[in-house]
Length: 226
Image (cartoon, rainbow, N blue to C red; front, side, top):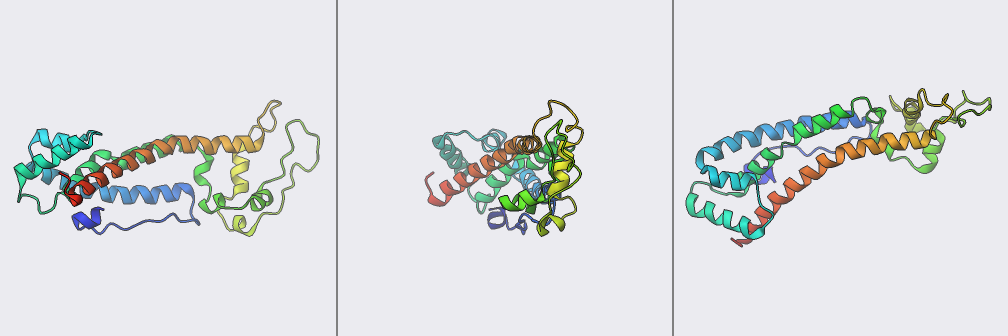
């Protein structure tokens, strides 16, 4: 959207399965910082051209479609000829105030001690059978079985990782198996994964909401419903 309406050349990043979740998030943060610099620069230009009340309406949009249409009419009435195309400026203001890089970095800091971030993305795409082969043999707490130090053979996809699913499980259950009432290792691992999802979900939803509002404005402009 920004490339289309602002003439930027922001690259489209895809998830890299051979990298860890943390490394993928760091690449995303870098891309978002680049985007943020661009929209902040554009935002400054817009603030110099648009009145503060009207700018505030763009920066803090109402859920009402009628109000958005009114805002667009006000822009065209007051600043006709100032902007060649208002799709880009409106998108820039909205994305700037979305402030996703800061939100994502804050979430990553909150998860800094989670073993999940070191898990390779490709491991999350493994089949049930591959996961079963990758998991270390772990007897239940208090078990007297003698195979506690043995591990099932790992699949090739896990052997090729720096931090495999096996190591993730070991990190998840570290210091737990000796406790009498320790949770099941798989439940512990699931708990770590759930914590990451809960922490990152609000950031993703915030970004999606901002993009959705920008797209709705663009649709109103293109369809000339204002």
